[in-house]
Structures are given as structure tokens and as C-alpha cells.
Length: 247
Image (cartoon, rainbow, N blue to C red):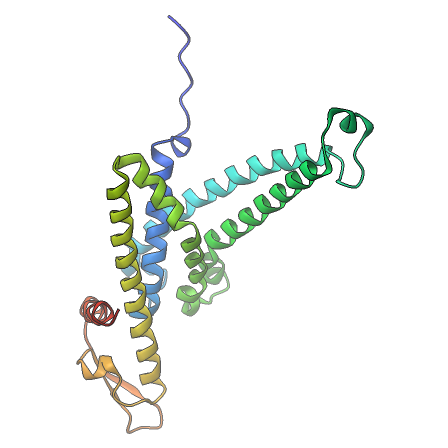
């Protein structure tokens, strides 16, 4: 019997990693705008233990991914640094036909890889824990908005999952189209409601959520006072409806 191949760590599994990347990215892209718009009181309280737990799990996974990328591209950068610059090729490279353009392409590839690593780190950095350490719990929702940069990676992640589990290219495109429409409606619902609520708190009378009965604001005082508020789920469903109707 031949020697069995060593098992890969779970995070490096070809079946596990693509799904986790897509799920974690969708989770952050979907929940962060929702929390900013419909749950502005979100903090690290036991009341929000599900959010806190899922945030931590996704952060651990993306931290592992960042470490893997850093290890990968550090090795490539080290190998590329051995090569001379495009203005100073060695005689042996001239003999071997290694042109300056090839060296330049390798350098550009390395720079793009490091830029990609920087963007990925920025989009997955757990800044909310920094805000907690600085006792700035009231801005936790806002510092988490760096996770929206995962939108740049989401199409690739979803395409990888679709190609793995859906054989028909037509079904793949249809599934991605409907997902894109749903995510767009979700983001529009969060943005529409957030803008309207902020306008109401700044003294604008009769915003559309107020007209729909989602909340009521008393503008008789010097500063607007929120006198009525429905549940976050009801506010979100109403906002999502209007986002879909007006898209």
C-alpha cells in the first residue's frame, strides 16, 4: 500500500475554503449596513451575542486567510528580489534571453499582489475591537464599514462557489444575477432608511418612513425627539419593499 497523503488543515480544504470565503463575505456585506441603519445601538452587549459570535468566527477565518496570503506573497517577493531590475540585467540573463520586459512584468505582478494583500487586510481588519479598547462603543457600527470593501471580492467568491456546485453555465449566471439583484435591493433599503432617519433627526418633517408609520418624530422642541419606533424587522421589510418597487 502506498503512503497516504497528509490531510490539509480545514481552512486549506479545496471544498471548505471557497464556501467559507463566500459565506463570510456575504455575512459582513449584508449585516454591517443593516446594523448601521436599523440597529444603531449595536455594541458588545450580551443582547447581541449572535452578531458578536458570528463576527468573531468570520474575523478568525479572514485573519487566517490574510496570514496565508502574506506567507505566499512574501515568498514570491523574495524570489523576485533576486532578479535584477529592468535597467540592470546580468550578462547570464542576456545570454539566456531573459528580456527587460519579462523582468518588468514580474515586478508589476509582485506590486499588484502586495496591493491586493493591502486591500484584503483593510477590508477584513477587525477595527471594532480597537474601538472597544478605546471605549468608543458608540462608533462600533461605523468602524465596521471597512468590511464593505469585501464587495470587491464578492463576485469572485460567488463565481467560484457557483462553478463548483452548479454545472450549467446558464444556471450559474441566473443564480448570480438574482443574488446581485437581492443584494442591491438590500443595500438600497439600508441606505434609503438610514438617510431618511438622519434627515428626520436633523429636523426634516415627514420623511417617508414617518409617513409609512415606521417611526414618529416630535419637532416641537429645539431638537427632534423620537416618540415612536416600530421593530427593526418591520422597518427593514417596509424599506426593502420600497427599495424593490423603486429599483
